[in-house]
Amino acid sequence: MEVTLRGERPTLTVNVGDESMHVPLTFTRAEMVDLGEREDKMEAIGAFFETYLGDVYERLGDDDVALLLQAWTDARAELGMPDMGEPSASPER
Image 1 (tube, rainbow, N blue to C red):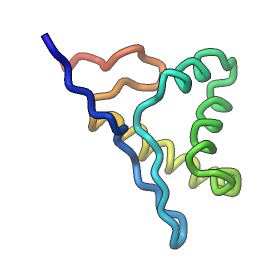
Image 2 (image 1 turned 180 degrees about the vertical axis):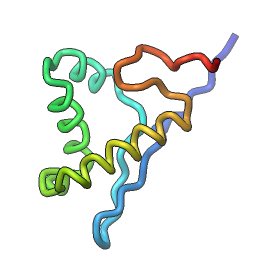
Image 3 (image 1 turned 180 degrees about the horizontal axis):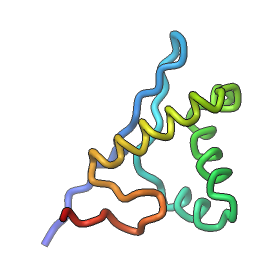
Image 4 (image 1 turned 120 degrees about the vertical axis):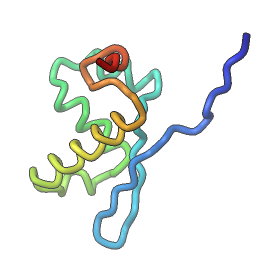
């Protein structure tokens, strides 16, 4: 038996003005622990995005934050990843 790991996490490219940044579509173990320990899940996901987007994330309007979260969620779904609240991907019906 064997397993082949990607080694690199897939990312969502986020363009803000002339700058392009990449937000991972998967979580490291430490990020999963952090998400699980925080009571406020929106604060937790905000901290995740801020890690990869820096202070750009703090300057975004709520419309851009909603757009970012939707694009990130859609990209995860395309990879077969579970929603934020699910431990594993939902089976196809």
